[in-house]
Length: 195
Image 1 (tube, one colour):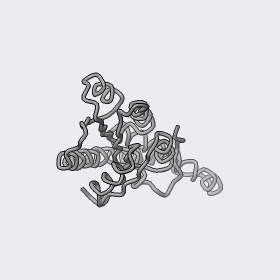
Image 2 (cartoon, helix red, strand yellow):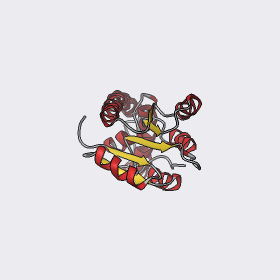
Image 3 (tube, one colour):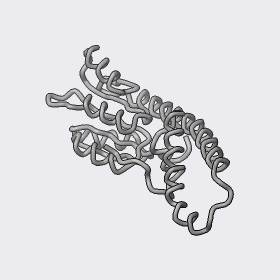
Image 4 (cartoon, helix red, strand yellow):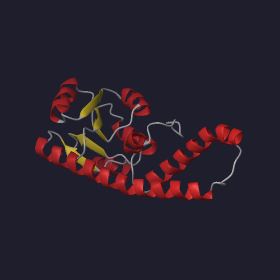
């Protein structure tokens, strides 16, 4: 796994958040106590992995997983809960979780799953990057060779944004996630608004 990854961990229990922060180091861990905090963080940051704890008396965690899946569907989501009900586990997976852990967590199993999911995301992103390069090459070949200098200056930024949007779409369709795309294309404004 190349470099540190950014992970969002959501849990209402303060002690559990601090324990998870220690467990998942040396990665950069953002902590959220509520769905609202998680929404705000996910809107403004790119993550390589989400870990959502659920099953409390007023838990909306499955709804949070659904929302994360909608806004960042290529980033893996791990769901943790003390709820052992098969129906609840199926609901979490149906909402978008790729793995369900029953609390108390086995730290070794969690770390190995996290490592595997992050490596898989990197591989998908590498494959997506190849598609991005094909998309860019196609666009460059299709561009008219002789444009006036003034028109080029005005159209350059719009064209870069269009290329980035097409590249982002190809990257996502090929399995890349938003965090890896933004690391690869940090210099141009994002083509989309997050929900």
